[in-house]
Image 1 (cartoon, rainbow, N blue to C red):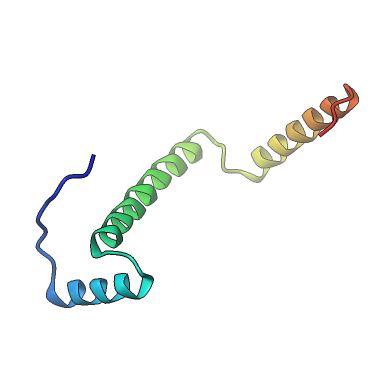
Image 2: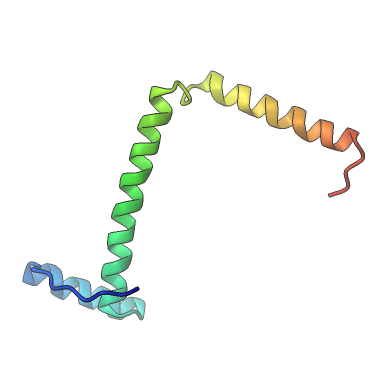
Length: 84
């Protein structure tokens, strides 16, 4: 569901944003929504990364273990006669 809102934006930022939106061939509304989504996704990714780090899942050892599990699973699937 789309909703209308009002924003107070610095004049220069508004002008540059409208100009860039036009150059990209999208409306200012689409441009603003995309920018807001980018900010939300960046914040969510930061939260997820902080969580993974707190769980110790950001080390080289962890990634090596995950890769070994992936390779073992792929080999087991091939050994079972799977055809991709």
